[in-house]
Each structure stands twice: as C-alpha cells, then as structure tokens.
Image 1: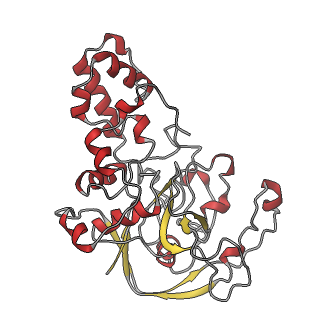
Image 2: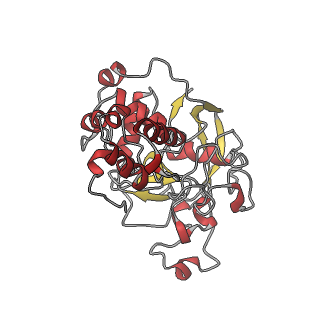
Image 3: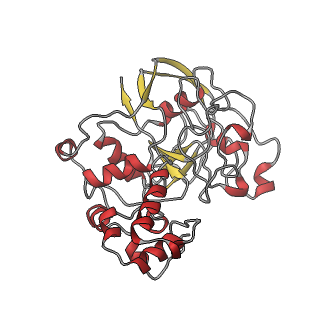
Length: 327
C-alpha cells in the first residue's frame, strides 16, 4: 500500500513513534485525564433530543450487487426503517484532523498508533530529527517522501527544512485516516468525549426527516469528496473543503472524504429479517463513505443510512473518525 525506501526509517519521528507505537490501547480515566488538553476548543454542534428516521426499506432494484460483484446484498442491513428517539448530544463539526491526532500522540504517549502513511509521506518527521540529518538524506526525503516540486539540488539545508515543514503544515487540516477503532476511541476519551453511537451519527448526518444525503435527497458528486475530486494522491481533503456537504445540524463531511468509526458493533437492527455472518461482536460499524473507494465511488456508499463494517484493529487510507459527547 505504501512504497518503502531504504531511508524510510529516517521518516519516523523518534520521539513520536517510540512513545506512540504500542499495539494496544488500554486507558483508565485517571491516565487519560492526566494528559488531556488544557482546553478543548474543537468545534462541536448540538443535536437536540427527539425522534428521527433511521435506516431504510430500500432494495437493490438496479441490480448493483450483481453488476459490481458485491458479496452482500445492498440495503438489507439498513432494514427496517423506523423512528428512533435520542437524547440531545453534541458531535464534532468536522472529522478529526492530522494535526489534532498528532497532538494526541505527543501528549498522551503510548495511547495510539502512528498512521502508516505518516511514516512515508513526511508528516511523521520531527523538526529536531530533520535538523540532525545530513543534506543528502534531507534531499532524498524531500524528493521521495514530501514530493517537493522544486530543484532541491540548489537548496541549502535551511531552505530544504523550511520547504518540507511548510508542506507538512498544509497536511495538518486533512482528515486523519489509517487509524484503528481503538485509536479513535482513545483519542476521544483523551478529549473527554467518546465515539458517537451509530444512531447519533446517522441523526447528525440525516437530520430528523432522514435525508438521503446530508445536503438533501438528490445525489451530486460535486458536493462531496468521493476521491475523484480531491487535490491529493490519497483522496483525502482538508476538513470542511466542500461547504455544501453540510448536514441539517451543521456537521461537515458526513458523506465522503473519510469513512468514520462509530461506537457500535455491527449487528442487525431491531425487527430485521436479514441475517449476516458478520453480525455480532466481531466488527465495528463505519459510516459516511470515503475518498479512497476508487471505482466504487457509487452514491450508495455516501448515503446517510449506508452501513459498512471493519475489524476494530483494521486501518485503511480512507477511514477516520469524529467524536461526540452528551449535552
């Protein structure tokens, strides 16, 4: 998935990775509070208490399952459509960003994985580490990892470092991806929040009337990041880059950009007739559709009712998360 280079080890920020590369996340309330940010200034939106329409009763009239070779029947895991009442809650206005997640890794050491992409795209490089490198290594990294579009042979060490960290700064506001469910859960706990439930996520995305997409009932790929219209190779855009991709409550990017982990295990809805071997405490639900689905950038995946799932220790280039909290 990620191309490796002989000097790839030099891309890993020593202070960051050595403290943050544990294979599991075990967090107590006391531990989390000790390193929590002094002030949580991440924007959240309020979703009022009340009923909303959850799920759907749609069927695959177009034969998309056969056409695209999907193993599972489409729409069936969304059945039955029903009204659900939720207490009021808050949810992040935007997906969690690289910059926010990096702060977590540095402050809450050992409580999350460094995304694999950071090891090879330059984002994991620390300034102190770059300062200690020779200019030949820096030039290799600038060309092969940062992909700087400039003549690095004519640049001295100070200019190279300045250019690399200018580019790194532009990556701060990209939605973080390549994180496990446990990573997202640990980050949200660190903020004094939690992952949203599946019902909370869907209400925040669809509004009380159960819209098909956050902006309405008509599909328009220009409104969201399907991966075919992002400005970078990985298909992930800066959060909030698509201003019309806004839910009735004011949450952005709930269709496209990155799939998002939610709290729930993947299971049948109450009253459902559909059964899947994937149901049970095996997989966690992901929602929203991602910018890395490639030739499967079908409107089906970006619907507010659409459900997909993944093993909680899975990472992918287009799976991230956002946090929620009680009001």
